[in-house]
Image (cartoon, rainbow, N blue to C red; front, top):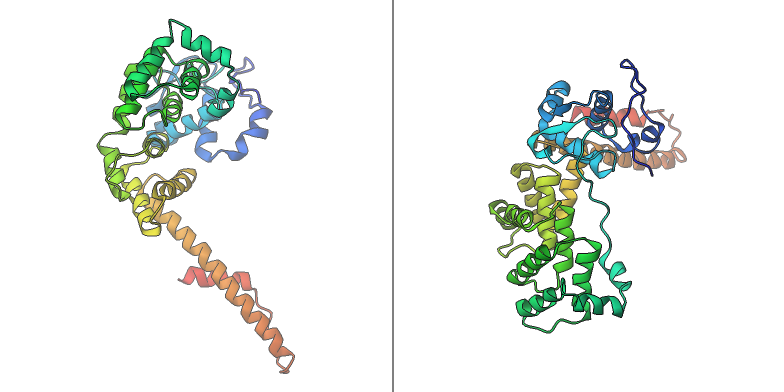
Length: 340
C-alpha cells in the first residue's frame, strides 16, 4: 500500500483528505490519532515545525497522548518522526509531518539464512573486513565457530546492515549476559527495532532497559533473575512504546501474579496492550475500564438468567392457564444494571 502524502491543493482554505486514508487507515484509528493527523495535514503547507506541547495545548491532550498518536502513525508508515522527536519537535513538511528515517520491516533470520550458500559463508569467512569477527566470537565463547554461527554474523552484517564494531559489541554483550550465541539474532533485531545504529546507541539502550525500572518490574513479577531478551523487549515496550507510568505497569504485574504462576510477563502484556488500545493513561482510566467490564458482564449474566426464566415460564404455560406477560427483557436488564 502506498504511503499517504500530506499535501495541499494550493488553497489555504481547503484541506484535502485522501481516500486512501479514509478507506484503509481511519477505521482502525482512535479519535486522538485521527484529529492529530488531520491537524498535521492542515499545517503541512506551512513548512514550519510544530511542538508537541503546542499540539497538546491545542487539543487539550497530554503530551503523552500526542506522542502515542505520532508513534501510531509512524508504525503505520504514514509519517516519519524526526531525529529531534525526543526534543518535542514535529516538522510539518509537504510530504510528511517529519523527517526521520523509518525503520523497514525486519527480515526473518531463518528465512534469510536459508538463502545463504556455502560460497557466501566462505567469502564472509575469508574477507579481511569480516574474518576477524569470527575469530573474536571464538575467543568470546571459547568454542569453535561453525556454519550456523557464521550465518548469524552474515545475517547481521548483510540483512540488518549492522557495522562490524556494533556486531562485535553485540557478541560481547550476549556472552557477558551468559546468553552465548543463542540469543544474538533476537538481540540484534531488538536493537535495530529500537533504532540502534552504533555502539553508543546500543550502550544507551542497554542501560535504559536494564536499570532500576527493569529490576523493579522483574521483582513485581516474582523474579529475582535478570530478564531474558524477550522479557526486556516487553518491559521496554511498556515503558517506551506504550508510555505507561510505573503505577500502571505495577497494577498489570500485580494482576498477572494473582492470575497465573507461569508466563506472567506475557499475561501482563495482554493486560497492558488492552489498556493501551483503550487509551488508558491513569489509574482512574483503569477503574473506568474495570467498571465497564463488570457492567457488561452483569448484563450478560442477567440476560442469561432472564432467558432461563422465560423458558421455564413457557413450560409452565402449557400446564397452567395463566396470562403471559410481554416484558422488554433488554430494557429490564439495563434498569437492573443501572440500579446496582
